[in-house]
Image 1 (tube, helix red, strand yellow):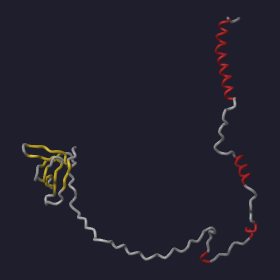
Image 2 (cartoon, one colour; image 1 turned 90 degrees about the horizontal axis):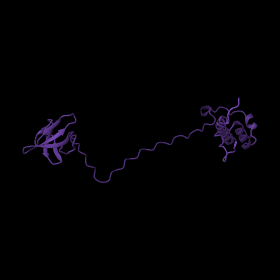
Image 3 (cartoon, one colour; image 1 turned 90 degrees about the vertical axis):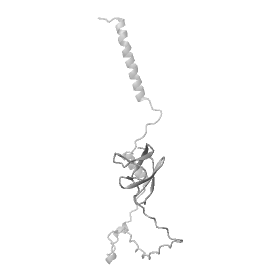
Image 4 (cartoon, one colour; image 1 turned 180 degrees about the horizontal axis):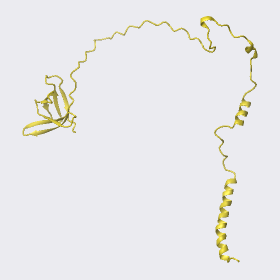
Length: 183
C-alpha cells in the first residue's frame, strides 16, 4: 500500500532535522580547532628518553680511580663513612661576662597589695534618704549594701557615687574604685 503524501512529509521533517544534527556533530568533532590542544602535563616515556639522550654527552668514567686500592684504616680517626667531613673541635668556652652595672638609683620595690575585690557594681537604689548599692558576686543573687556596711563580710563599702563605688578591706587597706557595669 502506498502512503499518503502528508504522512511521508510528516516523517521526513524529523528525519531531516536528525540528519542535520548528526552532520553538525560530525563536523564539530572533525573540524580542526582554532587553538592547538594542550599537551599532557607529564612527558611520555619516549619523550623523557629522547630528552635525556639529547642533553647528555658521553659519560666520563675514570677507570683508573676504580683500580686503586682503598686507603688503609687509620686507627681511632678511621671513618667508615668516606664522605663525612670531620667537624673542627668546639672553641673553648669563654668566661661569663659580668652583668652590666645599672646606672642610677635602684628601682623602687613594687608593693604587692591585697588582691582586687571581685565584686561587680550593677546599680543603686534609694530607700527614702538612704542610698543602697547593688553588687553581683557572679553566683546569681544580688547583694545589697549601704555606705559603711560590710559586703559579704569581707569588704567595706566606703562611698557610693553616681557611676562608681569605693570599697576597701575591713582593715582599711586595698581601697579600690569599682565602676558601674550594669548586668
